[in-house]
Image (cartoon, rainbow, N blue to C red; front, side, top):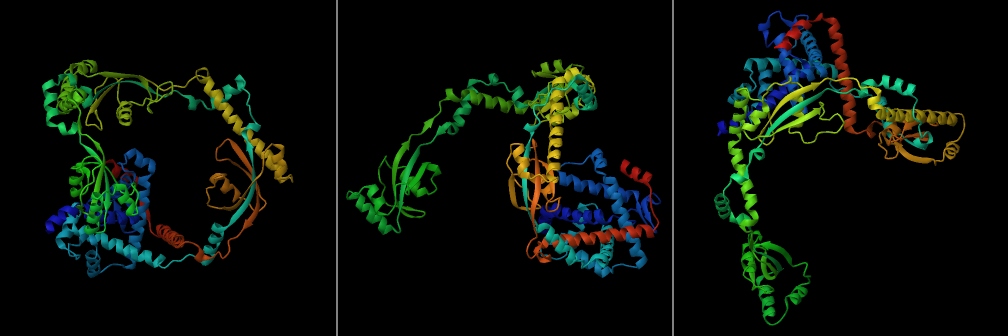
Length: 629
């Protein structure tokens, strides 16, 4: 039983332990206790404490693993460099090293009993009874590739560092003055008056002169450069590409049809009405009244119900949940009323109002569909044989066209496509198989070279070959004149609109009222009350809210409207402080976050001071060596 439990939960428990160690190492770093074989090849040293090349690489790989899990895909070396992971890990290890050196000087440590207690309390090592289990402990450590000695050493190290951390930041609380100021800041609301400055005030924009257009184009030439294009030939091999319904005989189709005839049969369906009674005696009395001439409708009415209330639905026999009801209903003629039926939910009387007869699709109607399905089954069976046949032909010197023809496959050629899947005219090719992977591979490939195929989601393959490469180049103005004119006009309109709005704001500051300005430009003023600092207002957007709270009472400003094609000129007319704003008015999680942030700042300050106290050295050559293997 214990072995079975370990087998089922081992991976999960290993992940728990790995997560615990990753958090410990990522936050505090690892220092000279686990991989001393590197000797003097240290990346970091702080006093008598050092971090070896192997320790740095271990921490780096674990940080990569954390990010890869977060993003859902493996982080490449290039992405890691872009994220600055090497420097992040280095900073973490330096922090850990100086804390360890401080702990060494202070003589901090843990007794073996305390370490044993911490280990025994770790849920990752508990057996089925909820207690520490030695076999479970060894099993989980094997899962993460760590010895018991290394685990106990790292556990002690993390606990000792925690003593320093708690001495610095334990019990830290945010000052009430700070919390009160934040409560006032968050709770303040404002009234603002504003007027839209529409783009129509500066339009139409005249066409630019040749000189202006050429100058603007020269400044933005990179935006109009032609990207690298590639001519790509590809062969898609999926079951539907080699399925041939004409090879399926009539006998095969007929045999399949007869074997699976139920799939082509629509069963009889009946519309059933059902009256449920409180007990069998009431049901029997009602049935006797039916026999005496009472109609089903009268019986329904006598029960205080409508025909809609007793409508059970239209079902095939096997779809009726109550077997007794199904049996009774499918033995009745149309509009016939049943005797009392002992159903699962009580005694009932039934009536069938509609009968849809069973029907069978004839073979002639489904013959083509069956042949296609059988051909796909056969194609799946021989798919790898066709793959091997194509590969053998290429290995024997055949061209892509020849290899494809030998397997009755089609070659498709894309005359020109860039890395994003666009043709030279800007349209996107939407039907490329495995588009992202295919383009990425093709733009790393050399011309006329055969490469391994790309696997598809349908368990197939895409063979590809780059036929021609057209290098990236700068386009001339004449090639893109229409687009350049459009873009220049767009930028010019925005620029003129900004200038006009700025002029109007100056008039507002000089004493002209917002209403006067609105009248002059043919607009109406708007008033927004109760505006809060963190709002995403539907009328003025986040940018507008930020602008309104960026000036004092009576202040003015201009911001872009949410649609982007107008500017809003505004003035803050009222500012209200929240009533009863105090520390307790802030959410508890926010107060805790502020306290945590202050604690983190203190810890950062401690680490910075320790870095000046101890002689910290970093060997970047060794660090780069660590990243190279």
